[in-house]
Amino acid sequence: MEVSHIQSNLNILILAAGLGTRMRSKVAKVLHRLGGRPMINYVCQTAMALMPEKIYVVIGYQGEEVKGAILKELDESLVEFIWQEEQLGTGHAVNTARKFFEGKDTTILVLSGDVPLIRPTTLAALIQKHRTHRGKGAACTILTVKLDDPTGYGRIVRDETGLFSRIVEQRDASEEEKQIKEINTGIYCFNSTKLFEALSKVGNENAQKEYYLTDVPHILIEAGESVALYQHNDPKEVAGVNNRMELAEMERILQRRIIKRLMLDCGVTFIDPNAVYINDEVLIGQDTIVYPNVIIEGKTEIGEGCIIRSGTRISNSKIGKDVEILDNCLIVDSEIADGCVIGPMAHLRGKAKLKQKVKIGNFVEVKNTTIGEGSKASHLTYLGDATIGTNTNIGAGTITCNYDGKQKHPTHIGDNVKIGSDTMLVAPVKVGDNAVTGAGSVVIEDVPPNSLVVGVPAKVKKILKQEESNAEELVETGSKKEV
Ligand code: UD1
Ligand code: CA
Image 1 (cartoon, rainbow, N blue to C red):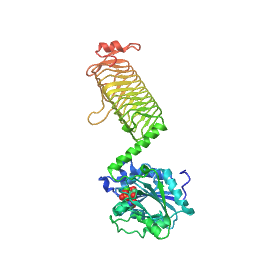
Image 2 (cartoon, rainbow, N blue to C red):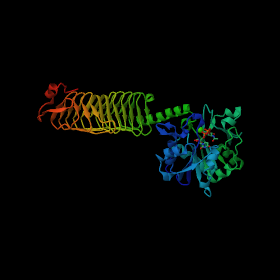
Image 3 (tube, rainbow, N blue to C red):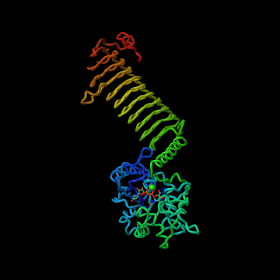
Image 4 (cartoon, protein in one colour):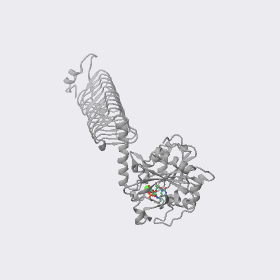
C-alpha cells in the first residue's frame, strides 16, 4: 500500500495523556525510551509519514515534557497539542478534540502513544479499508490482530454471523470472552461526525469507571452504522507497551528491525546481532564489522570498512572510513576521520576531533581537542582543550594541565613535535613546530619552534638544526624516541 496518496481529509489523533500506572514510574509512559528515543516520537514519525492535514496529540500527565519531546523532532506547525487535565479514559481523551472537528466531516485516525512500532503502510491499508468498506466506507474501522496470549487487551466480540458486535475490555470480560484471541490494537479510523455523536453516549459504568473509546463501535452498530474490522497479521507491530517487561520485548523487536536493515540493506556485519544495541538513527557503512557487546547511540554515523571491537560505546559521533576501534572505548560527541586507530580503552568526548590516520592508544582521554593528521598519543595521556598539529608524537603519561581550579586554558602543539614521556603542559601554553620536550619536563612557558626543552620548569637546552634527528637529542636527555 502506497502511503503518499492519502493526505486529503485525513486527521490523526494520538492519545498520550496517561501516566501508565503499570510502568511503576515517575516518568510518563510515552516518554520511556526505545532505541534511544521517547516512545511517543515513533508514533509521531509514523503519523507524519501519512501526510495528514493535521496531527493532534492529547497530552496530560507530564504534558509539557511530552510536548517538548515531540517538538524536538516535529515542526510546531504540524502538531496541535490538546490538554486532557484529568485522565478519565480513552473516550474522554478523544472527546477533548471535539471542538477542532465541529462542522467538519473528515477521517480521524486514532493512534495510541504506547503502540510505537506500527508501520505507515499498515495504517495506509487500514484507511483504505475504512474508506472503501462495502462501497461507501465505514463509520469506524478497527485494526485488530489475533494473539496466542491476548491477556490485557480488549477483545473483539463477533455475533453468530461473524460480524463485529462490540469490544470488551479484559477487566470487564466474562471467562468465555477472555478466550477470544482477536484483540483491539487501540488503532482505529472514524468518521469524525459519527465519532463525536457516539462519544456523547459513552458512560463510565465499567470496572475502571472510565470513559472507554472502545464503547463507541458498539454504539455505532446500535445506531445502524457500519463498523469494519481490519485484521492485521503481524502481532509484533501492533503490540502495546504497558509495563517494563513489554518495553524490553519491544526494544528487542525494534533492535531486530534496525539490525536487519543494517545487515541486509547496508552490508554491515554483526558477528552476534543479539549482543549489540544500535539506536534507530545510527548510520553504518558497507563492510564495517561490529563485534559483540557494542553500543552505538544517538545520531552516530560510521563509515565503510571500519572495525569496532567489543565493549565499545559510541554516542553522537561521526566516524570516517577504515577506522579501527579496539576493545572497551567510550566515544561521545566526537569526530574521527578516515584511517584512525583508537583504543583499547580510550575515551574521546566533548568535541574531540581526530584528523586522518591519528592513533589514540591505551588509557588516553581526549576532550575538546583537535589532533592533526598522522599524530599519535599511544599511552596514558590526557589531552584537554588542545590543538595538536600533524605528525606529532605525544609520549606516554603526557598531561595538558588545562584547569587551574577556576578556569580552563588552551594548549597548542605544532607539527612534527615530540612530547617526551611524562611531560606536563601547564596551560595556557604553546609548543612550536619541530620542538622536543624531554621526559618529565614541566612546561610552563611557550616552547619556541625547533627547540629542545628539559627540566622542571622546562628551559631551552638547545636549538635543533632542521635536518637534525631528534633521536640523539632525546637519548641525551633521557627520553626515548618512541614511547
Ligand atoms: C486500550 C484499549 C484496549 C486495547 C489496548 C491496545 C480502551 C478502553 N482500551 O487499553 O481495548 O486492546 O488499548 O493497546 O481504550 N490515554 C489518554 N487519556 C486517558 C487514558 C489513556 O490519553 O484518559 C492514552 C494513554 O496514554 C495511552 C493510550 O491512551 O497512550 C491507551 O491507554 P491505556 O491505558 O494504555 O489503554 P489499555 O488499557 O492499553
Ligand atoms: Ca496500552
